[in-house]
Amino acid sequence: MVRDQQTDEFSELFSEDTTVREAARERQKNDFGRRVYTRMLSMGLSQAELARKAGLDRARISSYIHGKTLPTDTMLTKLAAALKLKPTDLLPMPLLDERRSFPRSGGPTLQIEGGRARVTFDGWLPAAVGIQIVQLINDNQAPDGE
Image 1 (cartoon, rainbow, N blue to C red):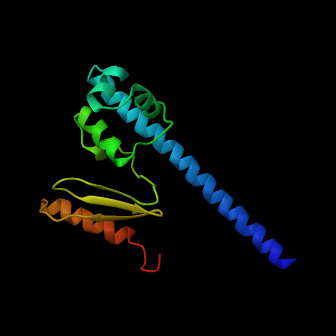
Image 2 (image 1 turned 90 degrees about the vertical axis):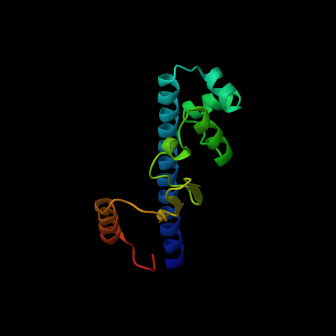
């Protein structure tokens, strides 16, 4: 009887975690869609014109704008180029995908895995910015076991 109760508690926790992730994913899709739509309008483009510039079909553009899907890395790169942005400019943060990495040429790389993020950067920053980054990291660093 105790084992069944533990199993039920685990199932309930897993179910809640899944629901939270699904809700976060929906917010990400909607945020991404808003970013694409806002930029598309600011450039005076229709969905068909954006699709042509990106080499995608109009239905795919519509699905992004309406928050139905998120693009693959390849589609994101094409879409960002058509909108004259970096791919990372279109991404909602935090992006909670299990394993997704978006390198920025000449800049930091962000990899997100299970609610944790790894940021790598090899370059020079103004001293004040570097100090702020180190302070943020020190204030928010997870112990090794997490």
